[in-house]
Length: 151
Image 1: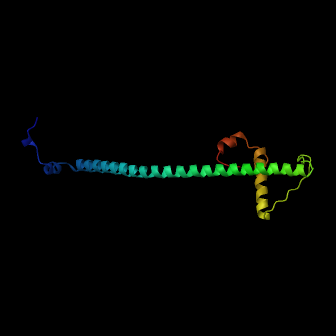
Image 2: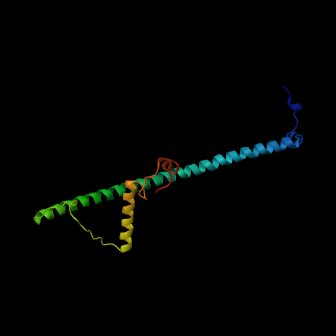
Image 3: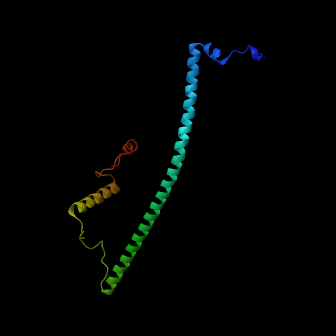
């Protein structure tokens, strides 16, 4: 082992380095400082995100509960209306109309533009259910290659 008396001072050791060794040391120091700062920044962001994610999950859960309650209320109202319709038809002494055999026209109390838009959506949904939007079924290779298109 070398004795402590044979060691040179730190400032002399730094001055004895070649310019290439100095650049490597500066590069290493910069990389290490960058890594430490990156870890610190990520950990600060992750802590904030965890709280935000928890809050957003709670908000989504509340929204889902509200939507489920609204849907349940609408279903109950629809059932009550159906029961009321049957009751009213029985009280009037009439019979319920068979929709398949009857030619029924339904009037909608909505502005013309909204009614047309709704009718177009219904027709488009029927076309999609039947095959595609233009009436012809898309080939399988188009469904695979162009899977992101909604037509």
